[in-house]
Length: 430
Ligand code: KE4
Image (cartoon, rainbow, N blue to C red):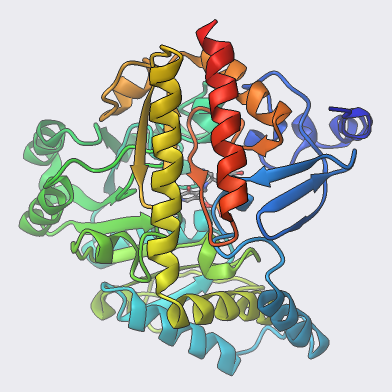
């Protein structure tokens, strides 16, 4: 595989941008390789500047549930852009998208559109603090909720990948207001609430942890969080930036039938354009300016081109609910391929999957907690990653991310991927 153009372009990028990228995990540092510079993508494929084709299971980290450059989405963006790329004024399309979210997402009575998952989480937490008059928040070690200061405490995704779980530059006072519990460990949550319960404004959780690799909630864990937060008057926030519109049209709260007080959405809701949202019960969302005293604003919030991409995507998902069964089956096929390859080549590995989200861990398993995740063999992951890339399969360059299976992954793609998994495990088993 020739990657000379990527190498040349990466050198130039590194002179101008920190690490040569605009988001850390893209730098391929954890896998000690040169990141591929991408020139285009269509459907399930992505193409780099050296004309290498890959089957893409990153899908822009989740948005591409319908595949890259889906005609209806591209046409919608072009139509919107021709009418002006941004007005800074209300549009009917924003109302239409808000209605979609209210109709689909169980906790959503009102919605605010923003530009990124980080902004959605930061704003939802502020609204919860304004609503409760309390300061403390609870998150889970290994979960990632974007890069706002208070959430960069024992976080997952790129912080785990770069081995800096708590970021530099976050004042101790900010971090002190964030308490961390252990995902899937009810005792750790009870202890925090027993000591701080009356002062906890919000508990935020990825209902399926997908930023430490995929770790599903244990049966009853989400229901437990719903009960204990209600008991203490704490706002329960489901961070559904990944699971929203992916596990079901109503996200994890529909999939697990647990309704939080608020939710954050991103990725799919913007159809791959910079757009996200936070939503929730009317009495909480009514706190947000200009209706209430919690300030939050954004020049490009509800941007017409981004809203057009989101609307086109949600319209397709709403009209074709069969997509969800299809991507779940595709995920199951890949899961079976990993299990078979690990057995055939005597490789110590285990797979976690929820619907179209899955991760392989190079440890015996089961992987049910952040502590279990840390047992995964990262040098085996690096070897597996390099083999998959050599086979033309583009997966996240980090153990602490998910594979994203989408509607555009066809049978041929899955067969080729299964063969690549077998090849990678054969080399690991040697
Ligand atoms: P953004 O600010 O990156 O749009 O969203 C932040 C965010 C919030 N909540 C969850 C559950 C998330 O997974 C994310 C972002 N996800 C990462 C990948 N795991 C984005 C990729 C990146 O950081 O480049």
